[in-house]
Image (cartoon, rainbow over all chains, first blue to last red):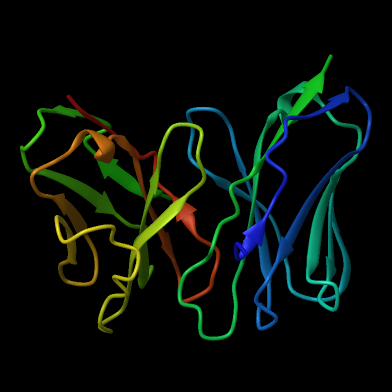
Length: 111
Length: 113
């Protein structure tokens, strides 16, 4: 089992819709989670960081964490074509010294 | 302020040659990471430096790969006797400390012919 699982996509949503990106992880010791966005040909950039169970909102982005289910998600409201990118989930964890990145979900927002 | 910088931005080499890739982290960041990303793939962790601690080399794919970090700042990733499967984008990231937000450089695109 991979440490971090993400559906590779592409996930296609119409402009203005809510995009839901999901990530499961295997290490129960994972304490906090980063979501990065990577445009084609570019480097990853941080979108959200969450460490408590529940929701964390930042503008159009909401991260949701459920440690009991080992599940973290990213919701993008009012999706825009500029949101089209690959979204990478990366948990930290007890004893882990570097982030472990999922392979990412490619999101396509159709105008 | 200045972000993470990497050089060269692109490198084309012949199979069997050695290459050196450079990373300048954000000033004050004690942690530095190297990743590799093949076309259409996720990030593959290579090596991690934290302050003066021994580096975590657990991700290096073979003994042809090595890295050093001088003076707790600049890092160099060296690939000896390059192979075609080494072709990828090599990304460097730095963070204030362990498990903090990582900030990525623009990457070095390596092509081994």
